[in-house]
Length: 265
Image 1 (tube, rainbow, N blue to C red):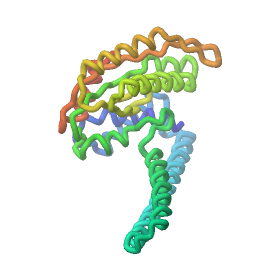
Image 2: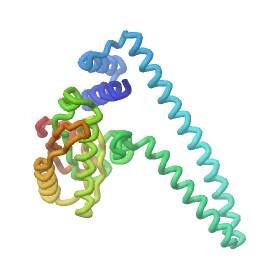
Image 3: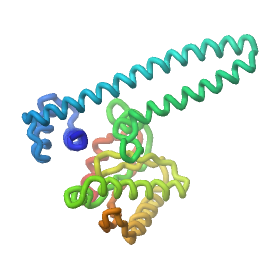
Image 4: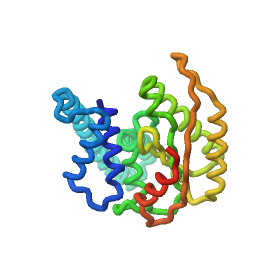
């Protein structure tokens, strides 16, 4: 059920993104429309029970995050006080202990960040990271980038014909392969899972023709590859893509609209 809710939410948000103001009535009307398309009855008692369970789990995760964050802040305050005292007394052994504690805190903070900003399946960034790190409060880019939209072909067909497990493994294979090949070229980029079957790859301001050439090469290699699942299903890892250069302070929503018009879905 959580997967269906996430899909409905993604479809709703992305349909409403171009609007400067989103009224609650518009959101629920759009949510209701997409829920019906996915054959969910919002008045169904089972659906109400399932969504309540999802909400309870979400609040539990938020509560855990707040408690962890509070503990971490308290630890940082104590370490800061201890560090000031150690520096004042020129206590090198105490500073070494504090350095280890800081590294432990850093690891804990990274783990907390992953829970917020990482997609549960692929472990790449999610939309929260995109909006909080790459865009300003007006959803405009903080700097000039090359943005590529990737569409995993046949994802919904594979889910319906076989199962979600096979479809998700196909996504993992494609996006991991893409990530590894781009890293081999020593490029600076981040991958964001934007929808179930769509990803954004955000590059630093580099030659757009180089990115096109690499994407085309990776696409051709994957197209000539045949994957076999444990259940004996044969699949071709196919994707299509389009990309644009976006300048600092340009609208993300307008860019996304342009990319959606160009890509062949």
